[in-house]
Length: 398
Image (tube, rainbow, N blue to C red; front, side, top):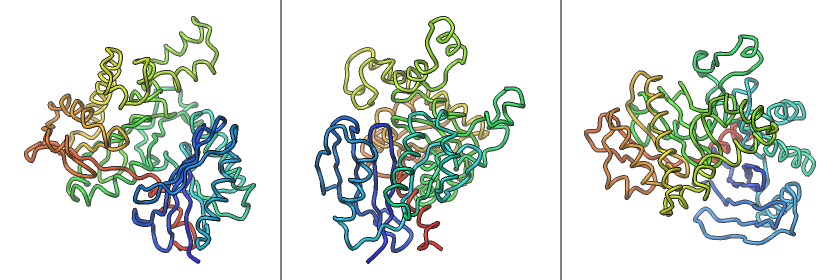
């Protein structure tokens, strides 16, 4: 019997997972299968694909099944499908670790209580991340669980880069910039020397993680120097349904003049803004790129403008720019968005190779050989990053 690691990413209406063989430190080749259970609370769909993309399981759960039901079904399915595998540990993607956690940590009741304190800072993710831990603890109290944080990669940020211009007493109470998507940035930083070379990895690099959630990170020697997200995962770039950077006065106006409640404002900024709010059509970039509706075009233009503007800001934080890296669902697959961003970054020294950009599959360079700033695409793998952290903390990694 061999060991396996289960990686979980629990959301508001879904539980996504990946299962890795754990005979050694996990690589992409160690992936056994991945999938998820979506539409929880309605008619949940449970689909699993093998590492080669072929479908292994496709079924529906009873209508109205909860997160706890989904966790039980998933664990039962793994146990019956892979009887030769012993589930050694479970790794969780956790969005917010605050100032308390600068790396992965084994989960216990005290850790769960501390993480609950960050629910309001990441309401789309944190409550569900923690609920999955609680559900597993009930189902399998002796199963080792590890929390891995999206904020941890940014923990060493320079103090100046984390500060808001607020009274010092609030800063001391933890009101500061944390940064997110750290598991993605950590993975890309690890791949950068192999894909682009050590000289590029050691230089001034901006990584753009563009997807339904979007942010950018300035790195030097593969360490976070500055990032677009802040106290919460709401700041910075325009996203699928999140507004990104917003004048705080707008929030005051909505509360005082429009009579909205804090919960209504939260719902507006997290779930009804971004690409969805501006277009009125969809939060999916693929849908918007395929549309000839002027509102879709405006949403795309605003998204690109915000990325290009933040790129200039991060280049300033680095004192120049040597390389730009695209990752995330949009960054990896939307060649048109990459083209438009690079067109607005010509002033920085970006010279895009249009043919390479249009035809790239996987990781590689998409800038011209003589481009002052090299441009790359590196697919991210947050699940694999979590699996590696879990393996190192579990018995097999000691």
